[in-house]
Length: 362
Ligand code: PMP
Image (cartoon, rainbow, N blue to C red):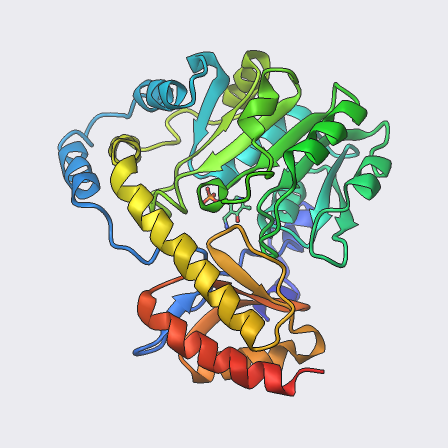
């Protein structure tokens, strides 16, 4: 694991936390004839209308982009029925999250989030300085909201709630998040990371946008990397109170979104009907994979994302080897494996591999 290697001695004085920082590890490319199911990307090729928008934008790249990406902000605000002052965009939702954290927390402050959750969270804290307060997930793979509430101290500046949670796929219910927000201090930022929102079919799941009207400290974080299929272009956004959003904007650098990204994002938002069909296909495929896993005897936590979670525990390395033997590159964690719902052709080798894995599990 390259992340574990001690860094070389640098010729300059580095911040120690940077010198020792983990570099984000990207999944390996798919083997010949296999499938890369390690980054929760869409298996579908870019829409022709998006490609056309990129080609159109290419003709203007001698000019700087609109620094505030106003056209995209306007489009997102209209789509979500909020004011333009309530939307901040950035190069990926991870970058927007970093801006949120920049706006509220410095070294010595604390940010509370569930663990295991998205690997980007600890990286943002390392870069920005606040201490990560990681609250273990419950046995059901869900956030332990009571424990998270108890973890809030005078130093807490933000709480991150991830629904559906990456990598377990579990959602928080609207009622429980509403209770959480009502009990948490109203001057602590609460980020609801809804990167996989478009794949949620559980009607009780939290709707971050609906909480914003009544709670000025709540922000919902969204991305165009998953359902919208623009992972390679980098576009994400936050919606919240205008004063919070102004601070998020102030925490970013100018010109962070390229002209190409802005135009492609607008085209993707315009193509929501076409994308809805693709999203529905992924949801059906996910549900089919989960039904297959349950038939095989897996104890799966129902996933509402575009991925499934295999709780392989101590058998994780053996399980990852079996998946690889069947041509599947998944994301391997110490306690389990996350597999993206990918190409139709990937389902059969996946379920063949999981049948072999489950036979060896306790
Ligand atoms: N939040 C969650 C929960 C994620 O899983 C991811 C991507 N894996 C992100 C945020 C970041 O996505 P992006 O920066 O591509 O918008």
